[in-house]
Length: 204
Ligand code: ADP
Image 1: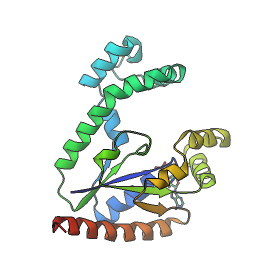
Image 2: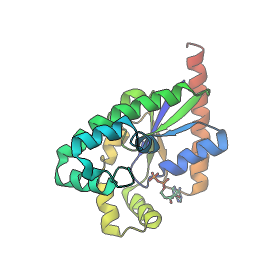
Image 3: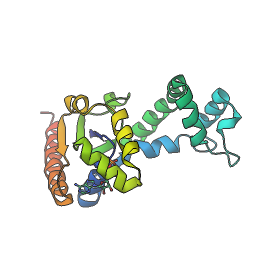
């Protein structure tokens, strides 16, 4: 099956675009943010390893990962992030592979917010970048999350540079217009991916 990696900066419209693919055309969508939560649920081997590595203080009394405590540690020591990712990322990839193998569709979307920055690029056949001008990202994030402008700008600035993301894109969805325009762009891309998937199936 053709695997399209859908990525883009925060507030670019990844979730909005993925929802349209799924709702309008029944395209299976696998969201790696959700998988990342799943692999560290209480009782998972990943959570046991996290506890062994970082100590019982990173586990809440309920048995869940204390995300706030993890974030504070990552902020204090960047090495914590790579140690955590070494535990979690291989499991996210394995789960994504398992979920994809169970699908029956011409193509699927693997939503990976940090596809360009991270280590999942090799999992996908094509990269679809949802792109919006940074000012629009900031405005959407302020609107959606109730963040103030300084925080929204800081979050946008901390991610991969727009040009870098666009450089690795096979397809770009310019989401700088209305929701109707987004819908039209999704319709076009859906046709495009169906045709690529069909060509591959024929072995062409
Ligand atoms: P991401 O998943 O990339 O962080 P979202 O899909 O959540 O971004 O979009 C951010 C916000 O902007 C959401 O509230 C969404 O509904 C809104 N949005 C996305 N695209 C458009 C658009 N073309 N026009 C208006 N609002 C949009």
